Image (tube, rainbow, N blue to C red; front, side, top):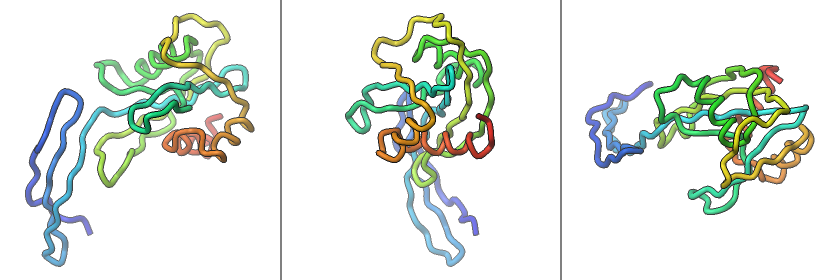
Length: 172
C-alpha cells in the first residue's frame, strides 16, 4: 500500500540539485522520515558503428576513477530528448547518428533519487563529422567484447541494464 506524504520540504538546493526531507505515514500509522535527491534526468545512448559498440572512457567524480560507459549526458537544456541524445553522441564520440531509436525510460535509484534516464539506441555513420570532447577516449567493442566487460564489472552498472533492456526488446 502506498504511504501518505505528511510533510515534504526542501532542505537544500542549488542550480544542479535539490534535497528533500519527507515524512511518510504508513498503513499502521507509523511515521518515517526519508530523504530524496532531485537532479537532472539523463540520456544514455547505446551506440553502434560497423557492428561495434561505441563506449567512452572518462574520469568520473563519484567513483574517482576512469569509467567505461555508453555515451550519455544530463538533460539540462531545452532540447527535446532525441536532439539531446544526438548532440551527446556528436560531442562525446565525434560520430554522426544515422538512426536513433527510443528504448525506454527508467528510474535510476528508486530509494534515493527522483531523476530518470531516457535510453536510446543509435546507429552511427562511419564518417567522423564532429570534434569530440578531448577528455574522453572513444573505444569500440564487439558484442562478445562488451559481454566480457560486463562479466569483469568494467562497464558502469546502470548501462548494463540499459544494454540488456534494449537487447530484450530486440532493438539491435
